[in-house]
Length: 105
Image 1 (cartoon, rainbow, N blue to C red):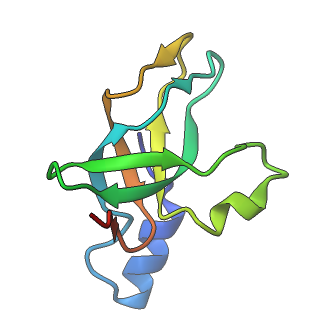
Image 2 (tube, rainbow, N blue to C red):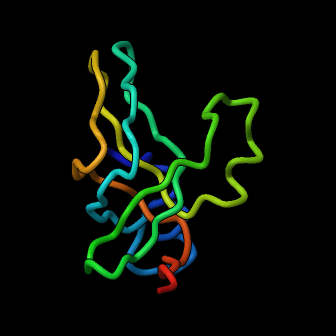
C-alpha cells in the first residue's frame, strides 16, 4: 500500500522525523473481503499478543459514514484491489496511526 504524499509532506514541513506512518506486518483475526475495483484501507485495532505477533482486529463497519470506527482504530490494513478474501491468520501490511495495545493475559 502506498501512503498519500500529504501526510509525509506535512510531517516534513513540521520537522517530524521519520515522515509518514510506520508500516508493520499484522496477522488477521478475521477474514477480510477485498474490493475488486480499488485499494482500501480497513480500520483496525492492532494488538500485541503473547505469541509475539501483532494482530489486527476490525473495528466493524467500514463505510465512510461509519466514521465512529476511527475512535478505536490504531491502524489501517493496506488492502489491494482484488476479487476475493484474505483469510483469517494471513499476514498483511498495516499503517500504524497510534500506540499498539497489548493483550492482557
